[in-house]
Length: 87
Image 1 (cartoon, rainbow, N blue to C red):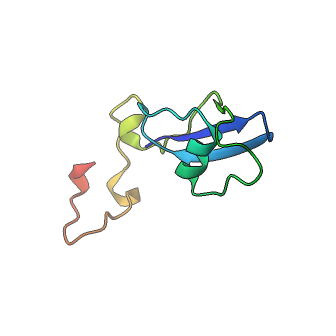
Image 2 (cartoon, rainbow, N blue to C red):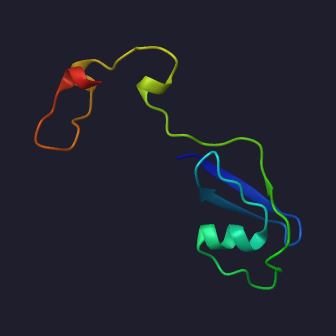
């Protein structure tokens, strides 16, 4: 899931949360609930804005090509079976 940063103009704080792309957060109360933080002195209904950009963990399969790491450089995947051709 992608990581998003939200800015609250009321308290000038930026909070980072992880959620699905189809989900939307509109208020400070929703953001605090998602991030697991206390709202403190900011009203729960204060609006927040998603900052432009997002961070996604990049893997070779997501780089727009089908390049694969060499077998000797590939990290072992956890589990009982390691199949180097599974990349």
